[in-house]
Image (tube, rainbow, N blue to C red; front, side, top):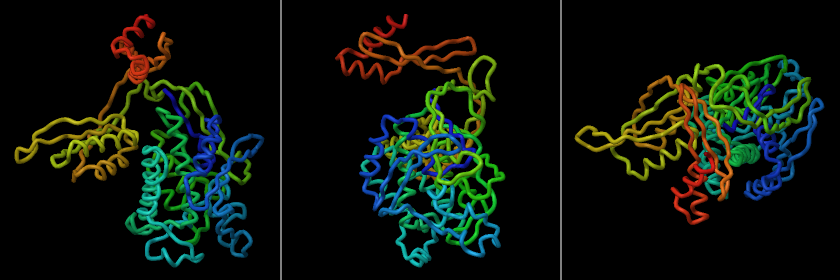
Length: 445
């Protein structure tokens, strides 16, 4: 199973995650930069620079807005810095200042949106989703980018006691943070991992200064986003995980814990700007794992463990709308989505929609179900599952390569060619699907 594992031992920020993923597909580096710089984000210019931390060479994403790299409140020159307990080297509040400071200075409650001390414009969630929707990018990339911003807006709304749609984002901060979010979504779309895992997240310690004052680390928005995620502090004082980094991890990572047994095929290092005793980077490892979690191995098969079934009854949606909701749930990482016909109240024919997901993703999928269906209630059923161990191999046939999925355990072995590969050969050669399948079986035997 194609897996990406993020080592967040020095936290996570949007630019660091982007750089680490870019190193996993170096052959597309120029294409990535061309696409990102051609999106028309106001005044934004993105460059990938070589950086070295503690002897390790990696990539730093340099994002400039109107020719300048955004810098925000740097208080280490002020006499009250130490009095407030802020160490000199950790007082920037911008994402790109050291690959881990806060973006919270770029978020402001609605009624203060036009009173920012610097006089910059602000964008609400509606404006940001509108901007994302009109970018020349695949629909899945735009959808995931909007979801990430939704997590940030929800967190900021919770912190400020405001609805998410009344939270406004500082325009300059939005420009470079949006570049980070889109960059990560695009690179993951290209890499197409089947599984994304991460270590527990090092959030730093102490305090950080932002536009609203001095905040504890992790900052309130970051702490809210990282609910149910294992986090820890340490000797490094300052903020290591930003709201954008936290939201990207929450959106894409399905499980946080130790690195699984995996055959690593690539490693990427996304560097922050500052220097610490430890290398200031996010490390991304790309490789193959089996489908099982080694902490939940079945005696004969693959993973065992809990999954969550979220279900709702629908009797006032069209088939097209239900189909679209299924697509959204699957693209967001649901394990499976299916429907059943049912008779509802007042003898109405209806549909039961069920979304299967991992326990840590339940809140995300409950939110998506409410957003994309007409239901007013979602049921949760926690199940224990047993699965076969899965692996994939590629077979050469006279007409091309065909991937084969092999499942085994509990005394059985099942083999199945990948449908998309068979269909592509059938379209290209003019053969029927059954002819291609028979040809594959002859080679496989």
